[in-house]
Length: 120
Image (tube, rainbow, N blue to C red):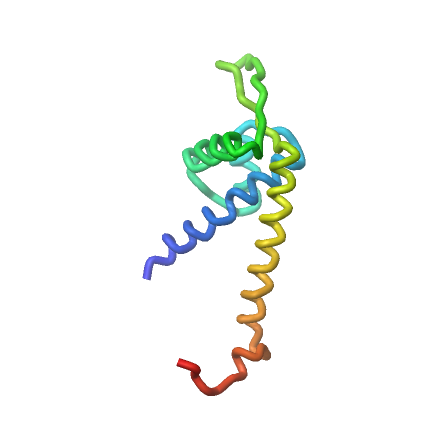
């Protein structure tokens, strides 16, 4: 069993929602997004975020602006568009429904867990 691979796949599945939630609240540079994710326990390689930001921008969920930097090249700051915020709400609702379903499965008193006959 490859638990680390499964955990990585679960993180990737919610990464889009997490990024949209961050950028719905404020504008951010990619390294700031990565730091916010690390603060909540989502460790991921930097290369994972950049393609997702590009895809979300191409889908109309994000916009960006360039800002000059005193420490090197200009920086691209992202923020969610109205469409991106609406999509984040839809993803959040789907996430809540999914986690509620899983919690019902975990509940020892759930109907599925009290059925003694296998339906297979």
